[in-house]
Image (cartoon, rainbow, N blue to C red; front, side, top):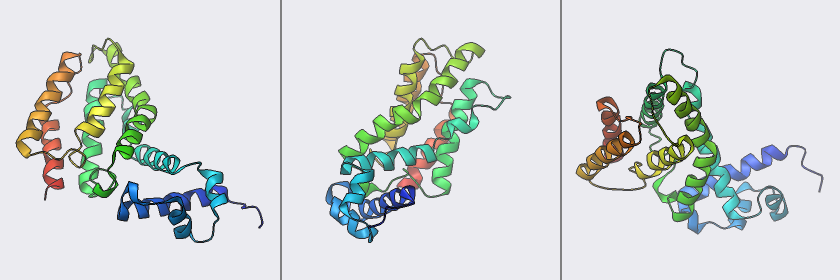
Length: 213
């Protein structure tokens, strides 16, 4: 067989087939052979050229989703906002876009699993947290934030807002979700990051209500 001249095209097709199958069947119910068969014109060897394991595919999917929805890089250069305001805008814009596009957790409920959550946490820390850390450090400089440990605060920010506050991953009542909003507000205020204002609370509730329509 001739060598594939477009390896990135093959990699993209593998990911697209995997997303389709994971969406229909769930993370835990799809084999490598089923992904190969769905692509249609590749061998298992071609699959293993790009991904060593099924977990590698999950990591690649998660990373691409996080990069595609990482709005914090897009707002980091807005000169008229201080760092705290940029963080608020990043959260608000990310959630508002998800609600507008009906892309409510960037991933269907059937794809949620321990494997997915682990991948999302680790990839989030690698992909999203460095940008958050940069904004936090700028906030320490402009006076809008007073964070003792910017790296750790950025990682905590990423995990809590992307996972714990995601109503598609943790399904709770509206009353409990409001309590989570209040808790995370107090939590970040306590470390010098008074993020959650009334406008942001409304954005979170709009996300919750959309998920539970």
